[in-house]
Amino acid sequence: MRRSIFLVLVLLFSVSAFSQQIPRPKLVVGIVVDQMRWDYLYRFYEHYGNEGFKRLLDNGFSCEQTYINYLPSFTAPGHTCVYTGSVPAIHGIAANDWLEQGREVYCTEDKSTEPVGGSWKWGQMSPRNLKSSTITDELRLATNFRSRVFGVSLKDRGSIIPAGHLANAAFWFDDSTGSFGTSNYYVKALPDWLLRFNQQHVADSLLAKDWELYSARDKYFQSEPDNSPYEGKFSKLEPNTSFPHRAEYFKGKGAKKYNDLRKLPAGNLLTLQLAKACIKGEKLGQYIDPDFLCISLSATDYIGHQFGPNSMEVEDTYVRLDAQLAGFLRYLDKQVGQGNYTIFLTADHGVAHNANYLKDHKMPAGNLSISEMKKELNDWLKVKTGAENLVISLMNYQVFLNETKLALAGLDRAQLKATIIAWLEQRPEVQFVADMEQGNVSMIPEPIRHMIVNGYARGRSGCIQFIPPPAYYSGYAATGTTHGTWNPYDTHIPLLWYGWGVKAGQSNRHMDMTDISATLAALLHIQMPNGCVGKVIREIVP
Image (tube, rainbow, N blue to C red; front, side, top):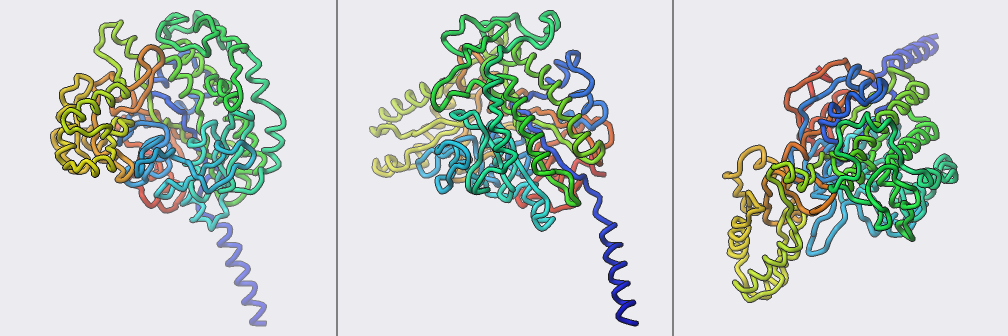
């Protein structure tokens, strides 16, 4: 009798415990819109419908003053910061590429892995260069690996880094095959749902279509006239940059056969279609523990680089993205259930105006030719020291020394750095210079000083950091534009929250990109990533 009573009590306790689950969404969806400036939320606002960006703005919470708090403002460190709540000095992703022990390293390269579903070099990728955990890692650990985590993107780094070390899988696009795959870091074979998705050859059908304006031409009032001199063409064969962009110019060859899909709004559509297939195929959001889907929309970055923020192409891309987001939100409502999922939408960085565009409108601006600067600096150092090619690279606005030649020449390293700093300080395209190994950044104003320190990853960053003046950047001298600097156009990013656990509202309080993961941890009731330096956004989680 006593045994029966005991078993009944145990059963009742178990049912009670099961029924008192920690309140969490069924699915978290992180959307990073690559190269989305904050002001795009409002610059194109009148052109948006009511179910995309406006749905997030009106029914969600907008953190209007969210900033990147490190340098450089590139794709890989941006995605890493969002998902780790950390900075390059801690998480180690110093840039998209860096020099380590004299060798150039790509952020997600991993020669120990093999491709699964794609070509060889494309598939040798993993998150092993990432030194800290991600919020997605912490979710997997907190639920004893019951939560499922996936990353999807055209870019490997946009998928791999957000999904983290412990992801079930990350999938990215292979330009040589027109399909999505992964590496054996995650799985030995592609899941059946992805095989079926690839067999549809969606990339081929999208590349077969001309890029025409989504709306009537007279509605595009936030752009320069079509065929602007500040825009780049798809190929030398394309007569100009006017709409429509004909599909006949989207034909690459070999390893770059499908590369132009990245430069079309259709690239974002393809990514969101893959995200839907992943949600359905993996039954995300259908179990007790929350799942996490990391989406990075990369086409906005490629289009922005080629055409610049004042182009009709960028405006059309965001008008189309608004409609694409609306369709994706409707899919989540149907598949997961409205009120069962939480979304955050942000960007990895912004972008500058084309320098020639600014100069033609009487604004100070300019370009740095890193290759010319490097040659001039090495020539000058040869005169001063007698040694050749003492500087290997000026990538990421940093000086990387040839340590071997420096040692063979018997040069004093500290003196050499001082000589280089003196040379850089005389350059009109350089505003500030800092010796990172000595930490002498006290005379550099905030927030630049803080961002330089946060961005210095020992062993992966250059020993000297130089900062160009506002509206100056490296590359894209004639057409297009780029990013990477401390300025608000590169570092002021959108941050929208929507869905489960989020009340409608808006805040103009200053927030940092590092706060995103801290807030997600509080929302999910799990530990912050192990390198997180962010703070919980109190407006989201009181």
